[in-house]
Structures are given as C-alpha cells and as structure tokens.
Length: 68
Image (cartoon, rainbow, N blue to C red; front, side, top):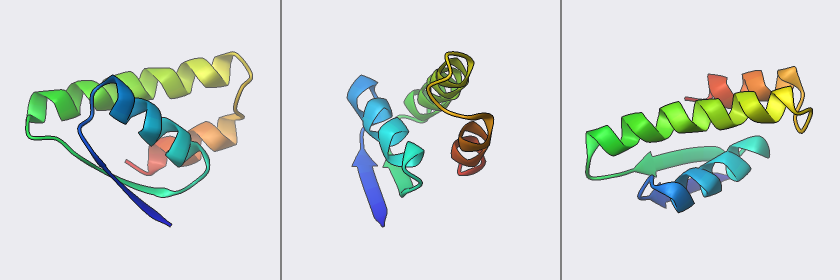
C-alpha cells in the first residue's frame, strides 16, 4: 500500500512513523525543504527511541529507516 502525507509537521511525522512501522510505502510532501529535513531527523530519533525502549526490534527499526 502507498500512503501520501501532505505536511511533515508533528501530525505528519506521527502518521509517517506508524505507517512505516507497518511497512507501508510512505511518501511525504511539504512545501518547505527545512521542514522535510527536520522531520526526517525527528523521525529517525523517534525510531531509535522506540527501539531502545523495546517497542520495536532492531530489524524493524532498520527496515523503517532504510525506507527513507
């Protein structure tokens, strides 16, 4: 399944994370490149934190982050 998200603020990042966690193809669009860059950094930190807390496995984290 392909999921398109317009806007990569707090809500967009949350939707992207949950969708990517279930291995969906996620496409994110935002009119500001800085927002996209900041969103990817935050999303990466959220994935790493979820892995550290045991919410996802290292394999899941790798699959999510490899989808960038």
